[in-house]
Length: 207
Image 1 (cartoon, helix red, strand yellow):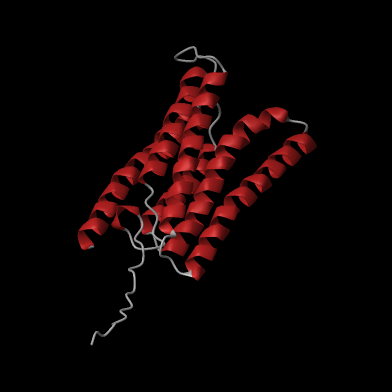
Image 2: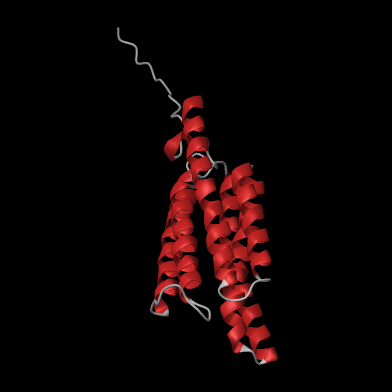
């Protein structure tokens, strides 16, 4: 006589890439993309603008370098955020979606504020100063929210740094504004990238 035995196995929860816990985001690629945007985009503007520029570049080139870097960083950040949700509970997934939405809301509000301010003061040239500094401030504030929600001290610390650097940069004229953003902001991303590689490697060893 044969006996059929039914065995129920519980599949392990999927683990995000790089061996991180569910809900934890691997920011390495995103930091590289954003860091290059700040270094090359703002750096190109710092070298090519002002009364006595060090190099002569087409006016569109620094903005193009900044845009490509920001686009790459955004794609990498989105992919990393989606991977981190594998195996995460419903609350963490919902929190991640709200954080993603905050990018859209934040930059829409920034665009409205800059447009309204430049129009009311009849000073459209202010946009050349407010956009780079305001964008850095907005990124820093969103990083603060993401770092707090994900309990990621490195991400939170980078947000603090970017918010402070971007607002301090407003005290400098052109090209000083771009020099501060490229050196201090881009440098912050370089340091954060190195620390993020260490953090992910430590997480892998723990697993």
